[in-house]
Length: 265
Image (cartoon, rainbow, N blue to C red):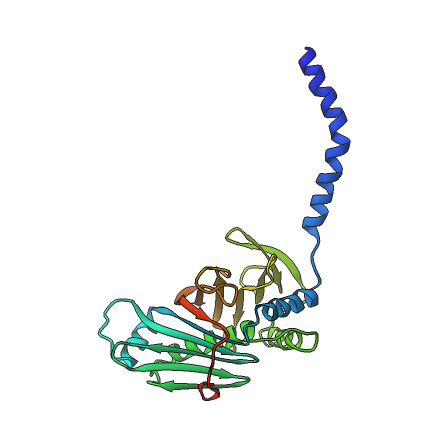
């Protein structure tokens, strides 16, 4: 009885001390930065990495029709619904990106984004889906990784790009990717155009949108800060088309700064 009375007494004394901490934690967890501040900090986070130029070597796995299209273009004998090739992603800020796929045959395909201009080099795939996948990957990675900070710099570029994708940047919510908390810019309802940004680092985590033909795309960037890529780039990038995984880029080596010829872009 004495023990129970002591516990009740401790609870009565502790409650006024514990309650403000709980309430403070709830308020802090509920606070959301304005969308403009989130986008600005995303640009500032890129600036802090100093990655004006970046070269990432790795592998690309393609699935389904995209796999068959790349295998056909690069003369690969592959009958499975998946094909893996070597890949290099190159970035030169602002707004210049290139992803090049190469095979043991010596053949290659490269998709290039330079500002608003796009082109394909090498063995141009006959499959429209392969071209679409490579161009979407290059354009969206460039929009997220090849921007620079500053109020009139990356923030304006990113916000214009979000507008083009019909993302409503003034709507902000919280989400989670694996165990990491993210900001969600845009309508938080499933299937809506959204940009997800890691809350702790302000690195981009996910981009979902539909193109002019109504095809849905979902770009996912994970494992920033790995021993392979550092904080310059994600170690893994996945692209989903109409709900199905079509491409996975896995980094094996990253260099920044690095000399990149302008002719690459």
